[in-house]
Amino acid sequence: MRCIPLGRSAAPLAAALAALLLTGSGPAPRTVHRGAEAALASPAPLATAALDHLLADHRLTGAAVSALVTDAGTGEVLYQHSPDALLMPASTLKTVTAAAALDLLGADHRFTTAVLTTGSRTGATLAGDLVLRGGGDPSLLPGDLDALAARVAAAGIGEVSGSVLGDATRYDDVPLGAGWAWDDQGAYYSPEISALTLTTDADDDVGSVRLTLTPDPAPGHPAAVRLTPAEAPVRISGRVGTGEPGGETTAEADRRPGGNEIVLSGSLPADAGPTEEWVAVTDPAQLAATVFRAALARHGVAVRGSVREEPAPADAALLADHDSAPLAALLPPFLKLSNNGIAEHLVKEIGRVRSGSGSWAAGLAQVAEFAQRAGLTAATARQVDGSGLSRQNLTTTQNLTALLRFAHRQPWFAAWYDALPVAGDPRRMVGGTLSNRLRGTPAEGRVHAKTGSMTGVEALAGYLDRADGRTLAFAVLLNNFAGQSPRSALDAFVAQLADTAPQPPRTAPEQSPAPRRTPPGIAHDWESDCTTAARC
Image (cartoon, rainbow, N blue to C red; front, top):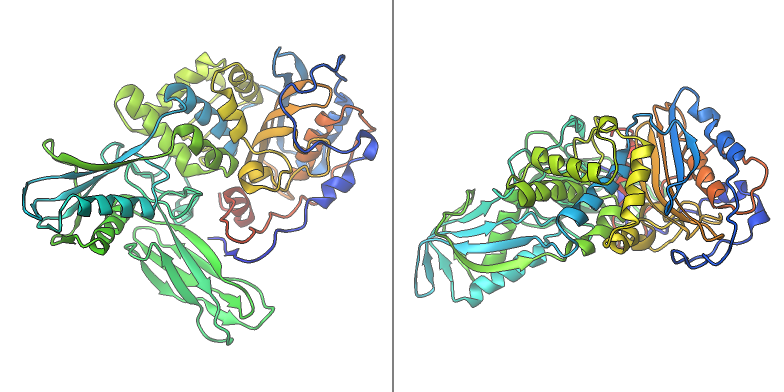
C-alpha cells in the first residue's frame, strides 16, 4: 500500500499545464454558478482543429481515443472523436452508479445498523446473544459502534451469557467484484464488500484498518506501529526500519491473501514524520463485531461468549440502532474521493431495496434498467461493478454524455453536481481528485467532472460552464497507452474547451503533473495510488 506522510505540505501545483496554456483568455473565475452568465449571447464555437491536435499527442500513438462534447441543455454535438468506441471507463463509471442510486434509492436513503437481543433478561444479565446487524452502511465508524455499546449499557445490560453475533445477511456473501486483481486484495481501494463493515475515518474506506508508522529518532531502530482500530483482528508481522535522516521512504504494509496477516517492510527516514497506511482486511463483518465487543467491554458490558457470524434469529428484539447520513451526504466522499467501497455498497443496496437481493447481479440489473431509461445504449456498455475497478467494464463517451444530459434535467441534479470534483479547487472535499488539475487555466473552477485512472486508462466526464454562458457535457476516454501518462493532454483538451477566445493549437507538456502528496490530517487518493503502483 502507498505510504501517506503526515505533516507534509501539498506538492507544487500543475505548473507545467499552466505554462502550456497561452494567456489570451484572461484569468479563470474561481466560482461559477450554472447559468450565471447565460445573458451573454452567441457562444463562441469550439476550436475543433486545436482539439484534434491535442488528441493526436504522440503518447496516444496506438492507443484507443474517444471524445464527445455536447451542449448539456440541447444535446447538440459540438465535437466528436470515435464516440461509439467501447472503452474502459475506470472511475467515470461511478457517475452511472451515483445517478442510479439517487434515482432508485432517493437522496434521503439511509443505512441502518441495529443491535438486537436474543433470549431473556434477568436483571442486568442477558441469557442470550447480542446481534450486530449490518445495514450496508459504508460510513460506519468505531465511534458509532461505541455509541451503540453505550446504549446497550444504558438499557441496563451488564452481562451477556452468549456471544456477539455479526449479521451481514442483508447482502450476499460474494466479497469481491468480477475481474478485480488478486494482488490488490490488501489495497484499501479494493475492499471486501459486506453488509456489516467498518471504516476508520470520514473518507469511508470500508473494510480497512489504518496503521500509523512513526520512525525512531535513532537510525537502525524499528519504527513504532499503531493500529486503528486497536482491537482489529489482524496479525502484524515484519517491521519498518528507521533510516538515515533525509533518506528515501520505502515503508509498505500489505495483507497476504487468504488471511489477516499484515506484513510490514521498508524504512522511514529518522527525520520523517508519522506516515499512515490503509489496508483492506478479509471478513469485514468479523472486524466490526470484534470492535463492537471491545466497545461493550469499555462500557461495562461483559460478553462471556465469542464473536461469531450468524444471522439474527427471527424473534430477536431490537435494542438500539444507528442511521447513516442520507445518501446525498455520502455522495461527496464517493465521487470527489472516488471511493470504490461506497460504489459497491450502493449497487448491492439497490438490488436489495428494488428486487430483494443484495447482490451485484440484482443491483446491476436495476442499474441497467435505469441506464436504458436515461438514454444509454445497452448494446454499447458492459458494467460488472459499481466503481469501475474491474477491467471488464466497457462503455462509450456517447453513453456517458447521454447520462450527463439526463442528470441535468433531474430533481436530484444539485446533489449530483455538487458531489463531482471541481477543477483546481484546493479544498479536498470540493476539488477532490481534480484539486491539483487545470489550475491556472480557463477551466479552473468551471469544470465539475469525474476522473478515472488505471494502468493504461485516463478518463474524464462531466460538465464545463463556459464563460460565454454555455454549459457543456463532455466525456473523454483514453485507453491502452503503454508509456507516459497522457493526462496532461487530456487536461489541455478540457482547458481548450473552456477557452472562449481560442488560440492556435496548444502542445501538451510531456510530463503530467506528479500525483499530489497528501496534506496533513487527511487521507489518500486511490486513483493516484493505483496508477503510481501500476497494479490496477
